[in-house]
Image (cartoon, rainbow over the protein chains, first blue to last red):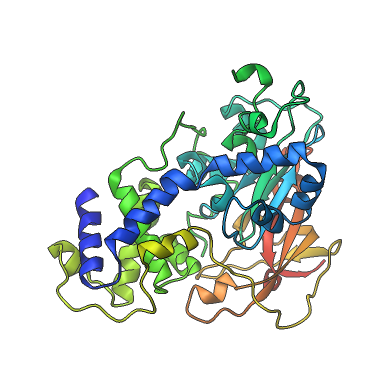
Length: 191
Length: 218
C-alpha cells in the first residue's frame, strides 16, 4: 500500500490537483489539533456551567462554536445526555460517520464490522466488550448516524468531583465516554 | 444498495476489539491517503455520498477483507478513473502520463485550517415539512440498487418522529449525479422490539436519521 499511495500522490501532484504542503498541513491538523481533547473540554464546561449545558443540549453546533475551540462545526452537531435512567450510544452502521470536529478521526473499532453490526441490536454486549456494565434499570438509546447530523454523548459527571475546576474535570472525560461505549473516569482513576 | 456495508444487526462478526492508546493513523500511507482524499474533496471532484457509494460498490469479499483506509484507496482509484482524472495505467507507472484536467480549486496549506471540519449539507427548504415531532411514520420498503442511507434493518418499520433536523442534500440522488434535491431530515425513533422482535433488549430504543422520501404516515 505504501507504494500504491506514493504513486497516487505523485500522479495527483504532477497533474496539478494537490499540493504536498497542503497534505502535510492536513495530517498535522488531524494528528495534533483535532481530537477528543476538544470534546472533553465541551463536556467539562457542560458539567460546570448549567447555562452552557442547556445551550449545548439545545443546539450543540452553536454552543460549541461559541466556545471558540473550533472555527467551524458541521451541520448539525447534537449533544445527548446520559442520566441514571438512560444511556446513549452512537454508531454509524452504514460507514463511519463521527463528530470529527469534537472527537477527531474515529478509532478503528468504531469503523469495524463487529461494532457497526452489533451496536444497534446488542448494545449491552458491546458495552461488555469494553468492560462496562450498566445498571439493569438503565434504558439504552442507540443513535445510528445515517445522515450528516452527528452526535456527541454528554456522560454523567462522576460523584465526588464537587468543586473540581473545569480543567481538572477534563481529565475524567474519555473519548469512549463521548461515544457511549464508556463512562467518565472516577476521581480515583486520575492522579 | 443492499450491500455488505449495511451491517446493522448482522451476526457473526465477533467481539469489538478496542486498541489501547490507539494512534490517529497506524501507517504512514494512511496519513497520506487521508490527506489526498481531503484535498481532492476540497477540489470539488466528488462529494461525500459519491465517495461512500464508490466504497459500497467494492466487491463484498474485498470490502470485508480490506482495512478502512484500503477501502478508501480503492474507492478513490475507482472514482479517479471514472472521472477521467487519473488512470490505473498512471498509478501503475507511478507518474502522470497525461496532463491534468482543470479543477474547481486547489487546496493550499494556508487554507487547511478552514477545511478540517465537515462540509455544510443544509439547504433551503423546497417545500414545507410533511411530518412533525410526535407523528407515527412507517419507513418504506425500498431496495434501490444505488446509494441510500435507509439501512435495511429499519425498512418497513413503524417509528415516531422525534425531531426535525432541517433540510439537507439528499444522498440518494447526489450520489448518482442526479443533483442535491434537498429533503427534510428527521430523527425517527423505533422501539427495539419493532426492529428485532421478541429477542430485543426490553429497554432498547434505536433512532435513525431519515430523509422525508424514506417515510410515509403510519
